[in-house]
Length: 104
Image (cartoon, rainbow, N blue to C red; front, side, top):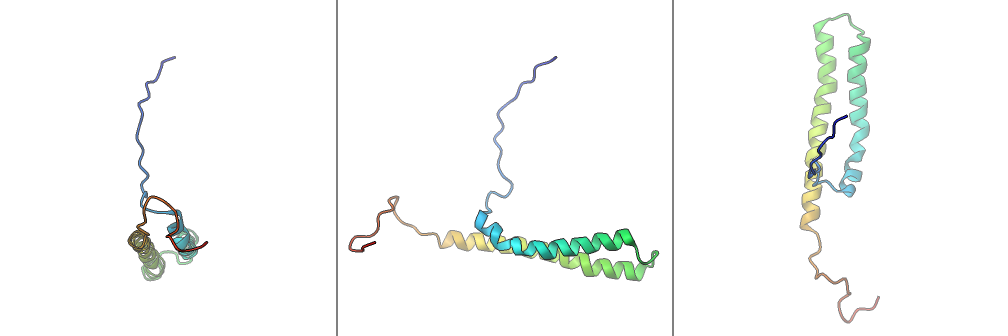
C-alpha cells in the first residue's frame, strides 16, 4: 500500500499544571458532580412531566446550575492549591544534605 510519513509531534498535556496530589485533593468533588449529572440525565430521559415548562426548567435549574458552579469551584480550588504549593515549595540547595549540627 502506501507509506505514511510520521513527523515527531511534541505533545503538551492540557493540564500540565495539575499535580497528582492536587487531583487527589479535588477528587472528592467527583461524587457530587456524578450525582448531579446523573439526575440531570435521568430527569431528561425519564421525563416525568410530559413537557410542562415550569417543572422542566425548575428541575434542570436545580441540577445543572449547581453542577456548573461545582465544576468552576473545583477548577479554581485546584488552581489555588497548586499556586499555594508552588509558593510554599522549599528553596534549598541542589544537595539534599541536612544542615550541619543536626543529627538524623
